[in-house]
Length: 320
Image (cartoon, rainbow, N blue to C red; front, side, top):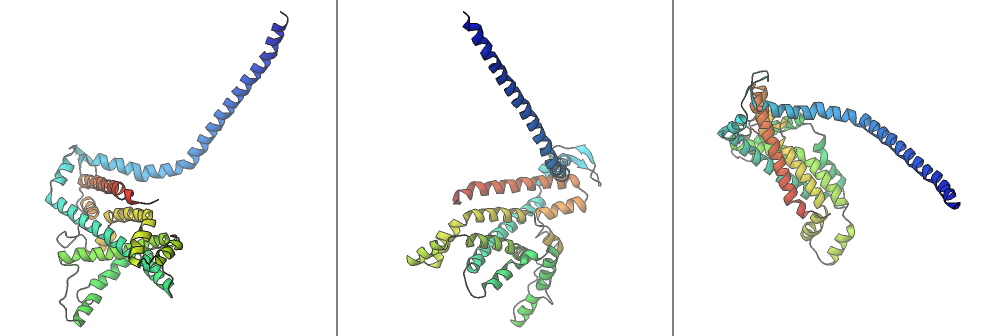
């Protein structure tokens, strides 16, 4: 009878101390979390502000304008819903630009990756003077779009250009590279591939140099040819890098603008009128901001679809 109160009185302070300790930890954890959130907003705030002003607001503004008719200064006037999209997707002129863009993007992507892979494969070998060739192959990374356009405009000039002089020397017929619709597309593709090749080459070369040399030594002992080593050792080992390069090259192809503007301005007869350049002309030449906004969103959806296809198809072939 006398022990029960004593027992009760001895456990009460323990329980009280535990509750007090738990409350203190909870309170300190609350203030710690609040302080973490405070610092997180301080560090993330500038980035979120910049993204909001230059990315998210223009994106939602573009979506908003695409649902209206606009005046020449871009002010919405009449709500038309999806009419701008329907008019574009049923326009022969727009569908022609879409087809031209697809040909251009696919050609640039395939040729750039193929040439970058071939050059990186040769440059990865330990040969005398190979450093000079590595520098030359990657030199286009330091060339601006305007300089590249001037350089290739000189080469494609029908009277004084390098190709014209070679044609005269070999007594070949002259080609109007930038005024003939058929050849203008090829000229733009060649120029874009030349511009993109340095980046692709450098990325693939770095990936190839990380492949263990023991794999090639073992394959050589087994009598494997260089071609067999390329397709069964090199490409599988650098497949993550190839996957990355293919996505970047495809997106950059859809975004090509500078070379088109400086070399052909979408001509001749809209043969090189890519979707990005069409958006530029509709917005800043014609003042049709509503149609340009709809074209921008359609282009965004197209890029997203192609990127998704790459992830679904190519990622299955990537060896991590």
